[in-house]
Length: 100
Image (tube, rainbow, N blue to C red):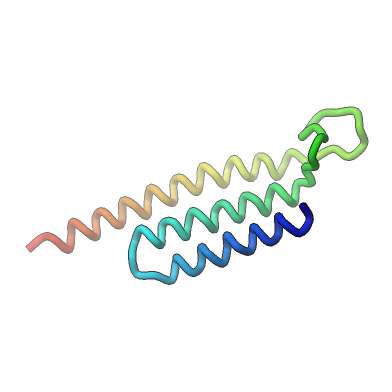
């Protein structure tokens, strides 16, 4: 798990950057989504959540920090907003190009 998660984050960021460098809008949006998911995974890994341990409350000593979970929820909402904005810009750009 210690090697798999950073490798997955690196793969998502690499794929996202590769897709962002393309010229098609849909590829760029998918790249943005992949980078957003990589950031969420990085925040989850920073929170110290372990398999079998409770996320916030519990009797064992190693408790997870709830701050990364709140940051992930905020990042998900902001990511949806950014994706909606990019799609609206793409639609407007497409409509502008079709006008005579």
